[in-house]
Image 1: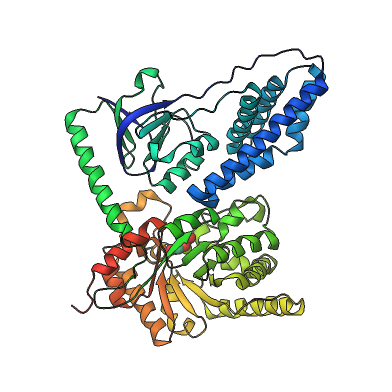
Image 2: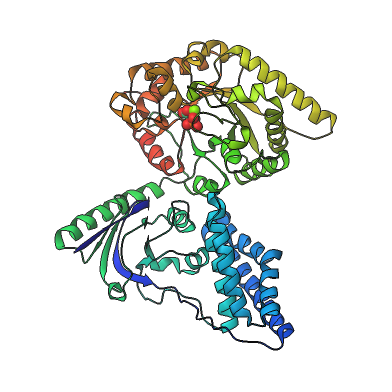
Length: 542
Ligand code: PEP
Ligand code: MG
């Protein structure tokens, strides 16, 4: 037995034969061409065919893995329209009197190098894409077939790295797991593994030799280990774990479409937390009742400048539409502290967690806040959007928020832009907000308790500092009592309260939360069904 370690991008156990996914290295030969105009036409024809293939791949991916994962093929189509890319290929053919394959190969190397040297993580990942589209064109020019899996049984794919088009062309029924030597946590392979619900490892220190082909292996996605030729005991243990996980997963699937209701009839809203549009398929797949926290600051973090109203509107509209009338709670910008975007040009602070962050930035720079509110109100026409304000500590802040939102609505009305009435709530994540939650409840439509920050501020323990772990008690009685107090004050004033911090998914506490009167729990999409299971097992009458 040989053991290899890597980084887990999705858990679970897979047992099966290894398939070494060898990239067909296209052998590009440099040839001198006399009729360069004809060679450019040859390139153009190959490009047109590549576009057709990509359009077909997009449709296939859309059906199989959803819009977010299919989007990569739209990006590829756009890259094949890129003028710089096309100019480069055509100029090399013309200036050097060379064949199209050679010109594409050189262009691919140059562009990939350029992307790889960029600081932006998103742009860096485009290096793999430019190589991918170029290989496609070269394959067409050479009349070669795409690499694939030609096995009869499902296999563990072992690869150096997988290009997006390679992963989607794979017959999914034949893939038990992905194991790659390179790749990143946010790579398409990782995203696909999560979507397909199969274990995947990246950064595995394994040499891709042909002898590995067909060998029995076990992928422990949870612990990031691959066993090749496992011994009897390892195999038996891992088979047990795989069967146990499958059993649990199957049971959970049966819960789809069922209510989140306790044995004695208490209904609970189980929603999901998301960071961007790409997470929506998981929300739908796991049958969440709505989105309880859309951390909108990720839109700002993924941008190199302030996202415009139109950009934001398109995103909020899409999430509202995709959730088809289910509640979508969008939290306004929570930048600052651990979430920094350079273009905000925030001063360095001694205590950033207690500094200029979240609502404090919005209130001191209302032009940024107003742009976001305009986009949110406009999007409210397309679904059930609710707005949530972070890091509230006082009634005075609420008063200022209301004044700004009133101004925004008046402007929209004056411009003839329609919007709906939306629910507006606040996050309870400071002890100050807890202590005045009776007063705050009179001013808003709902509360959502941010236990990540509430725990940090209550215990005075920096949530970012792992050295303080031994002092951090996630079940600290102070925090739990605060949750109880907030729920009571919410109900006394006729509003509902939820939890959207990590503690909401802590199933040891579900019963206590429900007994306190918590109405909603918003958790990572993969926790929705396990949480439903827990809720359905509880009997609060006892
Ligand atoms: C929280 O503080 O619990 C919360 C949900 O917000 P964030 O983790 O984004 O600070
Ligand atoms: Mg928070």
